[in-house]
Amino acid sequence: MVLQSNNDPDAFRRILEWQVDMVNLNHADTFLAVQRAQADALTGLPFAPR
Image 1 (cartoon, one colour):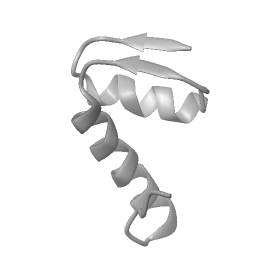
Image 2 (cartoon, rainbow, N blue to C red; image 1 turned 45 degrees about the horizontal axis):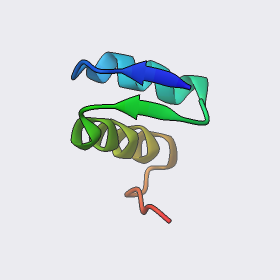
Image 3 (cartoon, rainbow, N blue to C red; image 1 turned 180 degrees about the horizontal axis):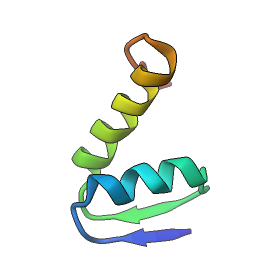
Image 4 (cartoon, rainbow, N blue to C red; image 1 turned 180 degrees about the vertical axis):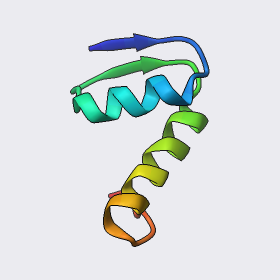
């Protein structure tokens, strides 16, 4: 589990790279935007959450 209380896109990128099972955060909107951008960059397709 990772705790990230700051609105820091670089930290969110690292957290996603670490593939942690749980993230406790205060800025879900930024985290999801970073997640979408990383998924788009990896696949070349828009991210579609399940």
